[in-house]
Image 1 (cartoon, rainbow, N blue to C red):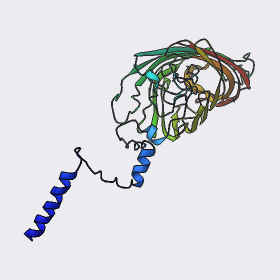
Image 2 (cartoon, rainbow, N blue to C red):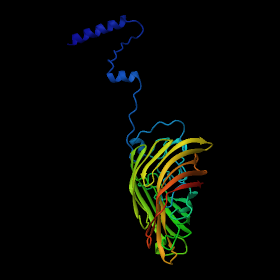
Image 3 (cartoon, helix red, strand yellow):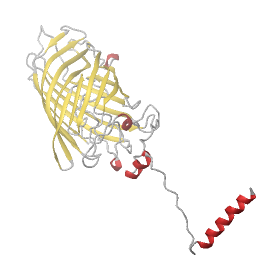
Image 4 (cartoon, rainbow, N blue to C red):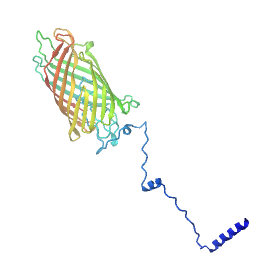
Amino acid sequence: MWRLFLARSTVLAALAVHAPGAAQTVALPSPAPSALDRLAQAGPLTPPPAAWDPYAPQAPQVFPAAPSAGTWSPAQAPSAITGQPGYPGYSPASPSIMPTQNPAGAPNSLFPPGYPQQNSTFQQTMRLYQGARGSWAYLFGNGQGTNVGVNELDTSATFAVPFFHNSQVNLNHAPLLVTPGFGLQLWDGPQTTSTMLADLPPNTYDVFVDGAWNPQLTPLFGAELGLRVGIFTNWNVFVFQSWRIMGRAIGTVQLTPTMVGKAGIVYLDRNLVKILPAVGVTWTPDANSRYDIFFPAPKAARRLTEFGRHSVWGFLAGEYGGGAWTFRRSTGQISPFDYNDVRISLGTEFVPQTPTGLSGSFEVGYVFARQLFFVDGPPQYQNLNDTLMLRAGLAY
């Protein structure tokens, strides 16, 4: 064995003696590339998708954001300058007076860029004073027979207070909106005779405080809650029936990125109609249109043009109008009464493209199904003539 080892050593030594002066190395052949290596050499691998983050805003994870040209602009749905006192905490011209402004070009709601927001009741930097509004409506009538005319004036101011600001059931940080308001109604008719005692006072008043909270409870479910407490009378009478408590409780569900379903109730606390169902959808297919297919306050709005720092919208709307008050009849009897009607209007309004600014509206409407209801008749029911309506409003 040792002889074999010696022979091998002698051969290696001889090779070393006869080799060139430069050292030589032998490179091993590279292994054949695998399919994964060939894919990597063709181009960089796409990073894996981001993991689901249960603590992050989940709307982009549920609904992909729609592309939007330009930078993020405030929600340009019409402002709430034409809200009516009969719907506590709710206006058929939602969102609220002050449009939402999102900084750094990033949306902070469930909706992709460019879409009017459904819960635009707060701003990124919350301010105590949110705005004031006033409106005037005239229902034509000469006071003869049942041709009753009405002047309606109301004004209010809205304040925002943090309310469960960082709660897990308030994802949109919606504040509590507190709105004190005042309204005045001037009545012309109906004509009173010895056989028809359907008298009305020359004027009635509303003094109320309204509270509203519109939280987003989860990425898909939200709520629109409101409560109103006030005195509704002609000041010659102040009794228990002069107090009214109204409210609303509406649940919302995000059906698509541009459609919200709604269902709930509106409590009117009138003598004839106490409660109404509230059901429908709000659809914002793009930044230039909004459709509230919603009872009892449907509305279709479309942006017509822009001038300066304002957008001009046109709209077609409907509403269940009226209210309830107390007064002293010509016989000396104290009586609560209701005035109810249905209104369809066509109008226009301008809204600012900035968080603050002047808003305004003007509309022409047709008013029908008008009725007076006297708790202490006679007559208990009094049907009134159909009429036309003019209404205008300003907000800042």
